[in-house]
Image (cartoon, rainbow, N blue to C red; front, top):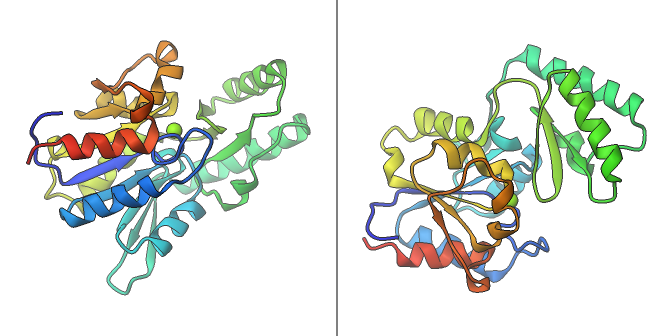
Length: 246
Ligand SMILES: [Mg+2]
């Protein structure tokens, strides 16, 4: 913790701003209030779809931006209070993803695409909760042979074409919209393997305590790792923010 000038808190959503059972608690609202009171921005950086970003920006006027689909697209609120979408991959990559998805559905009819896949632009997601390990392995093998990237979060296997990562999304956001902010004035909170691009490249990264469940599977770990059930998910985020000396 210690002292830093905080301008932006970037945060993963599932398991970080929500609890691991997916519950959105009042602590989320406390986090939004804590940052808003200090003139600091919260930017959700999530593997969830574009439409989730629309939900967040529509219902939380305190939020000005969200980075969704694992960094494939940035949503921002404009001066007319409408939401702008900034897709970070090119049209060819969007189309390549489309055809691989059609092939996947044809070859693996039992592989359940997430219900929000229709709302996705730059990636797709598989709901793997009820899949057999063996079937998961076959699907991952298929994606590998097609040179499609993928990453497993708490809830989904996301896959995409092109150079998408949470870190690239965050960098693009800082470069396009917040040139006043230096990376050292921002922090990132995460809890899972799909946050590793941030853990690898971003200066200030915090793992909330429930990251303990996957720590031994991570190639890159956050600099700060919180511990104890009182620091799980959103509790850890709020405790960390409260501990920053200004
Ligand atoms: Mg997560």
